[in-house]
Image (cartoon, rainbow, N blue to C red; front, top):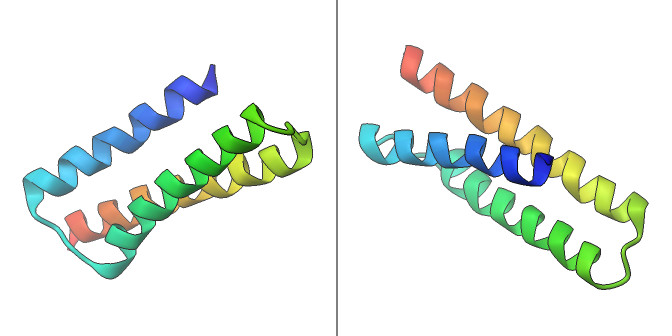
Length: 78
């Protein structure tokens, strides 16, 4: 279920960043890193499905998503 919920929480700040025009290295690279980690998670799941490696990719992508939200909120508050 979380495979469908977290990407929605990713689309929202991407849309908000596009509307507000906020830019920055962390926001740009962070968004692409999130996409890469989700792709890695899916690749692990569809190939050899090592649960610990898959969980690692999931955990890193979730922490990165939280950091992106915090960075966006701080930028918005400034």
